[in-house]
Length: 340
Ligand SMILES: [Zn+2]
Ligand SMILES: [Zn+2]
Image (cartoon, rainbow, N blue to C red):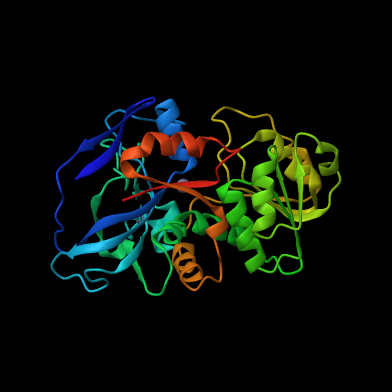
């Protein structure tokens, strides 16, 4: 079997690796589809994702679906042939964060496709892989493996919206119209937002945001002045751009909420804390997701949420280099996946 491994900056190899076999409670999966995420792009183009540096070959990929190939002893949740969404989150279930129902805050988290730990936790850009049955979510119906691989990013959007609080009747700003910005639009609509405005610095992502239900879009680089008056109840900063965060704070009403979803540069940032104080605003972080993954699988499999407009391309695993190049071009692509 083949695996896609990042050895260093712009050094990605498709290599034969040993076929794993499932132990007790484990499931052998054949990859269906795996989305390329911003963190995967950082690993490939920079050899690091912020402070997480590639120190041994890393198999990227944490947004995947698969088909059950075999099950180990004691597995009851899935059977051979099932289509599954794979949760990349392996939380310990015992620490304080887990016990409070916030597995994303687990202090012993093993998150797939990440160089945060050494040895690295290998991801799902490989033909076959083994997962604990708890991480496999079987679905029925005609949902495709490509759609199912959106469970992870959709969960990020649902969690962001959850962190922002009640949206019924609210006016919402989302800065950034990539995959996570667009799934946040979908989640905000589900939650009853009255008006959703999205900003980006490129036209194509803004068109995508309109396609999935944004009410208004604007170019942050050209219409900056429109974001100086407080007019939104809740803002989600998804782009990871510090100026966008400043716009969120400026454009949110007194008593409003700003949720930081994107990753800002890893350096100290000057910040207008006085504005937060004087407007009694809440600035909240949203990190990955917890129970929202389960919700995402249901919303996708019933198509209450339709992510099909966001899938811009699928490449065979062997063509991962081309897939990464396509994924990096935001003028052409939203979500790019590798498939087997
Ligand atoms: Zn991701
Ligand atoms: Zn834990």
